[in-house]
Length: 522
Image (cartoon, rainbow, N blue to C red; front, side, top):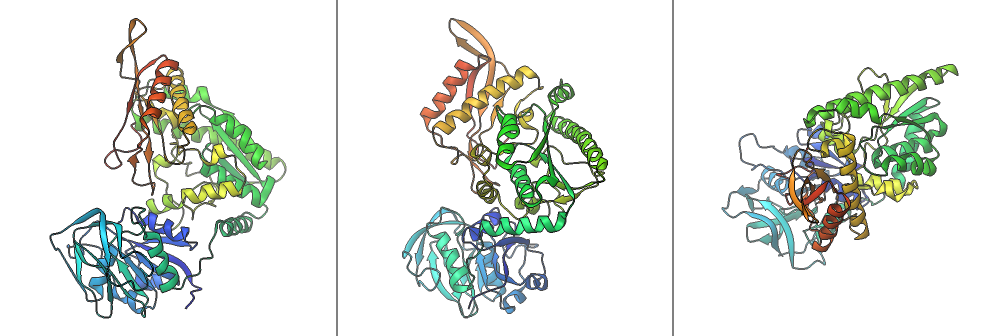
């Protein structure tokens, strides 16, 4: 049976991997969206989903207040796939037994396939999977074939293909599950009958058409940050409405080395967009003088950005008015994770403060254009490549809106910015030379400006600054582990920084995962 229905809906039970599940479905060329577990079954059914996937979660199904699952879902005829907590909630709702066996499984676990069925057909009878559970399904619901087990999960997978229902105790969306993607695709293609027809080309064409329909003949404004998200959003709008778009780039002096020049030169060359550059470097330095508290820095930067943007906006509105036009639309590079994290995808996203420099003022009377609202970061990069954006912009590591200001621990001034910019440039250059740009998700370099480090350089003692290297890798952009960079690479970075940046005499490496440590030090 082939489905012509809507998206695959990932029901989020509070899982750290819910976004990763949605991404894996999209990697299988099937469009997916995340919905909260509180969404009523009638509302789910009204979306006409091609299938529903129940995510993992931190709870036990029999804890008071644990997210529950309405058994009515299984009467709708919608194909359903349960993962971890979703698997247990599914088993319980259908009359199976979930209990605390006293045997937990966390991390890499040996799975024994006892009946290949549909999910495991042609796959090894023994495989390594990623588990994260304290409870287990001990008895499958009536009508389900048990297809796998592990030491801690007597029922590690089950399926009732006649009703198009199945589930697994492990996490197929995690790369540590050897054949996880194939298991997920078996559900999508063999059980649910979904056609793998969704591509980035679909996204681009749909968004260009949607932008044209939304904007019509109106004028559009876009604030470029220097990052890939705003660049791609602007490129799509430019493709849709051409010279109706004007981009504004506020150079606040807090970017990394060479980034402002890239925006001014490379982005314009690639897109042909009209770009207005506002040099506000001194203004930001003056506003930040003597400020050490990171949240105060954020607020100052956000405030000054808004003021500068407002001034540019007034000039452009006046220019448009001279020819009898108005500017009605504002482009934002809102991504799907921003929407999910901000409350679930209804209405305009309320972006958390650390996603940008503080947002734009409420009294700006614009209608938002958000062409990336349905996309994950890796999908945005694919769109960027398809739009011909320079690799330096496409593969740029994520960078906080307040920029280098919150990577300086202490007050911000021109001298400290120059020190950090030089150290950061060396780290990025060496990482690129080692061919590890895409293995490392982010690589903040932090200047401990208020800390003095005793060193020896030449024949004399020095009192320089330490810097911290914070390379991290991530699958889901929510959790992260510190990147295991080769020692010789770390040595080269350290040697070059201490030799070439004379104010720095100590280089340290942060080996803390997230959680418990965040990416930025602040």
